[in-house]
Picture 1 (cartoon, one colour):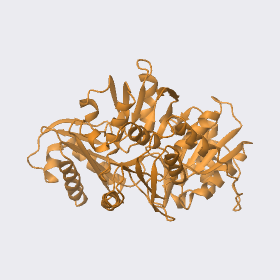
Picture 2 (cartoon, one colour):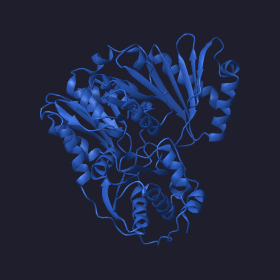
Picture 3 (cartoon, one colour):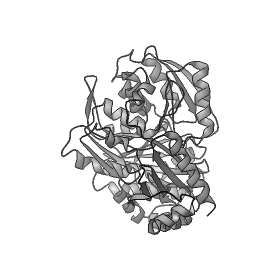
Picture 4 (tube, helix red, strand yellow):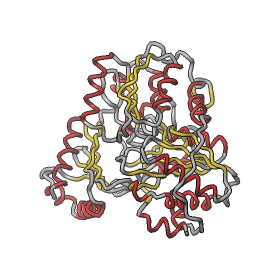
Length: 470
């Protein structure tokens, strides 16, 4: 079999971060083909004899990891399997060991889909690496139906806990009462242990044996109500959760209100004294309006685009970071925290922002009051054909004013138009409407920004409701 042919015929494609597709399309041979092509795309640059693998809690993930491992063994490589852990835990340990790694995860997308995320020994692959993988032509032997069991190591889990437990005083969270919405998060066996080791009183909430596709960028009404109820019942100082693979945080303040991911990223960056940021174009403009940073670079949506800017930013600045609207925080340079060195981790991480914010302030709600009054909201239309999304974006770009009239906005004037990723319209009154097809699933995403949260949510809901019926 040939990797190029198998991958081309699989129907699997790279999205904003990793290869994603239907579980039915991730056959053992497809998993093996991707793994082999990945290794062949980087083996000229790096010397290694081992590849690390970890998974999320999706029902399909373990079998996919077995197939990846079987494929890698055809290259005479050793495979170390770290079990169910957060993506940043895998990336951190693999980078420490200077080996490549593969995370089997579909992140927040439904459980009938899954994906593969690839990490070089120096970090997450680039968009250029993705094309090299897709173009690789390597012969390999088709896998048998009987895949071998994998022996699990706890080394990556322990290293990830140690990264943060050693950064703070053992009592930094003393007196804090924290709820952890565990659901099916890949890090659910880590968070309680870590928070308690730092002095917090922790309450576990809603652990699920069924995979729950939490999207930190489009929090459901059900999860919003849950947080409000939990806050009233338990009097939490904060509630913490993540998406499926534990690289995107979801944090609620003491009142049970979930913070938007870019608000959490902004607060974290201020507390870390970051000088220069790389953030996707969809993030809140409060970042610039806060005046907290010497430079802010806007990118396309997706962690590879954010990471790609770090090397350029480090030429002029010593404290470099990035984050996304989903809350994933990327540390682009080594920095000092509490008099200790925190090494760069240029991949999305959920733990750093929550620990920095909880460890340095008493009231998350009060901290937000100091930010510029800009509020974001987002949602999506599920099972929306990508081709239809693209047609809508094209129409809205070429005929913006008539498109707005078509979706019910008759009295809104456009100030500027941005096509960095999808279509981002800034109106004369300061509101922003941003439409783009998802890079991971057949969904049309909508982002909005306004001077109140209610206006932002109304702009999203009204837009999607009318677009759905076009």
